[in-house]
Image 1 (cartoon, rainbow, N blue to C red):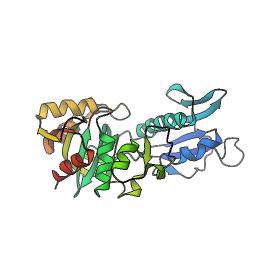
Image 2 (cartoon, helix red, strand yellow; image 1 turned 30 degrees about the vertical axis):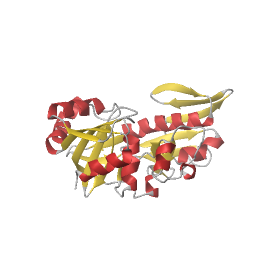
Image 3 (cartoon, rainbow, N blue to C red; image 1 turned 90 degrees about the horizontal axis):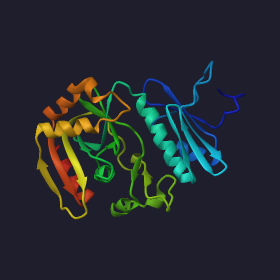
Length: 280
């Protein structure tokens, strides 16, 4: 793939699991932004006898950009930042899908004194705000979107840069204009965990919270039943990994071994302190 290929110099290679994921940034202006999306997974170009298929690509069109994935429909973008975001989403799916022996939970979290604290919830529930708040408190992160659940019940991070509202970063004393590829016209900023205390390793789960951000609701932690927690976990399972029914015992183990709560909050910083204290 080196040297003579016309694609040389615009292909990126990543490895998170069982195979190499290949991305093509055919637009020179997008090559460097694309490289910064998954620094933990980028690998050197492999020596290949035959070319790999391209899993994800971004190309310039007459009116904008097109992001193409091997296994999904093309996405048409009007601006460069939209193209970077769509490229990141498609590459996330490809990388996560290569981790075939994990259940993928739509969750954020951190590791506190060797034990994992998780927050699950829909988009807008405050998972990213909680993740960066826990980082600023000195707890290595499990990420803000996808957490990998192994067969032994331990969790580990999917190392995608955190995507956080710039207002939240400012409230935590972090300058969003210093983050990777900052765009003042975009509603999110990418935050590199290595700028704080970094990524967590594998850990058993001590606390699971069903998170919900509401600017009008003060901090409230309420214990919930195992049945409600299990139902929430099943609905948090993502399609990129093993389906919930394929290894239901993993989810049952989480409910059995962890303390489970409903978390309502209007301050992510305050909520992060409260849920991390439960693991101490």
